[in-house]
Length: 366
Image (cartoon, one colour):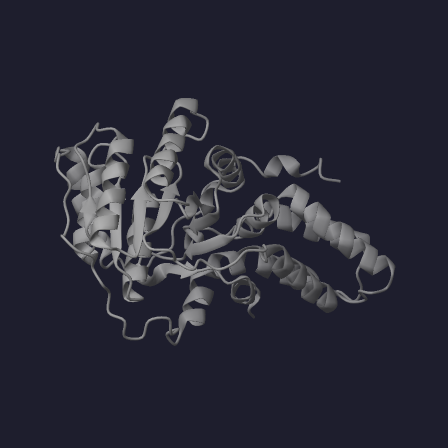
């Protein structure tokens, strides 16, 4: 059944990014462009002498309109396969094999993934055969429930303890890793936590300066060395600084690397070992940042990085820029690694803690 259309999955053009407010991102991006064109080589650790504590006012209390914004930012996905699904169901009086085949194809094209979709529809066909599903509206509801179930990967919430709590952030180039780190640091600071950033990406020109620019913008200290330094040495200094300053959370940025490059993956393992030797049990969280617009390639990245350093959580960026939000389902189902955060825009508070039920409600909303 898949042979007639499976070739359609590859070669899809990347969806254009959604527009949104760029403050303060547009200022940062302008500075990053200037830094890229003429990288500066600063050699000493920088940052404040003590932990930066955020404003605790309103920490942990959801602001009004958060679901509305999520619904708006997921508009491309909703207007993509959800609207097509509703059009397919419109006017149907019964569920026939042809309808199920068309829906199956639609979900694969939305990047939910062949294996995941096959599992979903194997169950649906059994229910239809047993007369458990009798009409298209019931089918839509059952499909929504199945997707929600797939997103509920068993995992506890991040407690951000003990202190210092070490987060190692990894991923390939171009996924929005440095920006995600800044947004996460901003989020933690707003919750009243002291945060320290470590610029262990010494390979890419001006990478440390870009992270430092973010640090200054959100008032979070950054530990960095000169370009070309040993990433493990920077990491070691960062762990020492975190202990001495008594910070709550330290976030380590690493060089974007191709998941197929063995030597770079070995370097990542070394960084992880340095962290664990300095702080017992660390890194406490290994977050891989994935670009939602890359589709099934994101699954391959997650799998290979996880084999190398044991990924504990996923951050999925640029969900506002794709009509194929089904990749969220595919990653959760195939990897069984919790999706910790999703990026739905360029504002500082557009890095959202992932809530499976809220996500499904947003994309299935009328």
